Length: 218
Image (cartoon, rainbow, N blue to C red; front, side, top):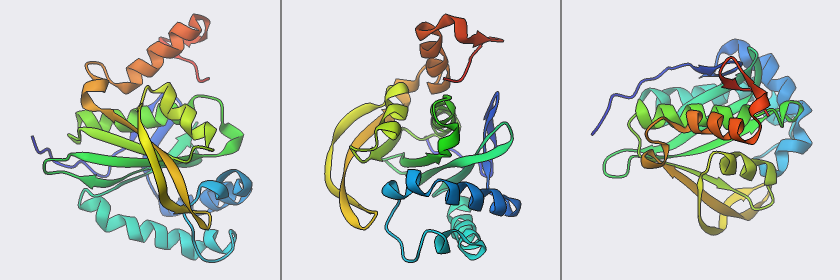
């Protein structure tokens, strides 16, 4: 049942790519994060310092350094999300537990300027398929604040199952915040995978959006 954790890894589908962080990502990461303060800050974990202070070179280096060892140990998969080869956001598969549990949680964010194109559902589907079919995980959980409609739509498009209300679940933006719990298991993804299901769903909604056999981004 146990499988070898395969990291680092790069996953891609058409114009969407998930890859490990690189030192050269600093400038793009800082620009995107600063430009998206109002879009991201309400959903971010509570942290010290101003938004600008939390997105300087030192903060970036600390983030990458903190992820390096857990990634090697198979405890986290910290991905950069790229769209058309440009930095667009991040997706982290974290809290990876094996043994009898074989589960992980996923968190993600996307540049608001790219929202509505199907980028985030595609990226999450890529990550789920890798977790289920290569890394050998059985369950993926995503916990989202009820007010975060955009993030909820991502999991709903991929048919994540709503599993419950978590009262005062995480300390977000200065307070303990309620969250909604969603989950997907390997059985839900079988036999073709989450990405194939997402493509099929997009085609069913609007067949005219197909190109080269791949559903165009929504």
